Image (cartoon, rainbow, N blue to C red):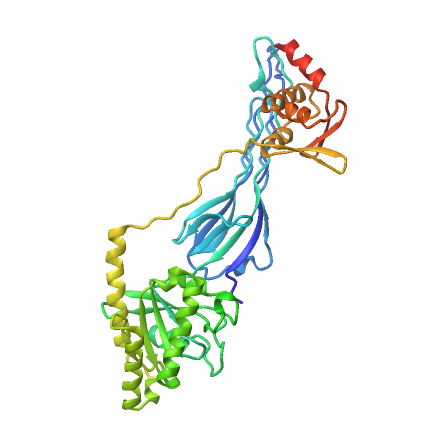
Length: 436
């Protein structure tokens, strides 16, 4: 089975908790706080690797989690950072945010990688919170939660030539003749169930990669037949070779070309704009007059700018000329690409979202937001000093003011990141004023 698209659930590791430790050593009275920081949680990384041809490795397992960072220890010992979890994918894999389709990375070369979920930083130990007036703090931070998300991997094969056409046009036979590949061949539609790749040697001695995709039928861009799952692979190709069955006769040949061109155009403007070479196949079954008539019909349909090469994929006749035409066009495109330059745009690191909202539902009031949830999860609720610090941070973020504006009564319960708090704004205001 050829798997070229998959949705994965990934979760990076949480940061390790900081240590709450006071130095206890002979002849060192009142040694002070010496709690170390927690280690960083493991990242989830997607990396392209040579030798892979599909996403089949994700057929059974689609959830990946990294380990948390190690806890901090006394004597200011830092917790161990967790190792990253690396997901190996074929070259040509595109990584998308599953929720909104945002492109995260286009891994079109070997050993390229992108971090799709970052591990949480380790919590600070109590040694960070010592002050001249507060010399023995018991406050510490828990580790930051690791990122969690769903990503979509989409494989687009990288090839120089893309062989397209209707079912049974002879694409797989031509691929075998050009490259020595041995795809499955039979005399019925949809023999090709997955893309096939082969390497062809050009007249110049250079090699190019050719891809044969399943035949396109009417409505392929909407999901008819097998074409919709593989049309996107053609987006990587530099040149399209339309393989037409010469046995259809002049009207049938022109109709087949129009149908394939229509499906490519409806799928994307990118495919419609690619350069094309037409390979008129099975000419060994045509008489000289029939071949002349078929070529004339194609030239009238295509115009003078599109090469038409009569071939016989079964016998190999005309394949050298076909490669020569392709070689010329590919060489011109290589020069043009070097002049224009190429680059990929990736989404850079995003700033933390500090927005939040107050939600009232089924008698429960909650505060939803990335920043407030992160603060709560990093707070050691068993430490009164840490809880007081959390309350101050929530006041500065405007959470208390938002709850008051939403009509939340004093004494009501408020849920933030699965923790239940009792809302007492007047007491909080007095406590803040007293410390100020």
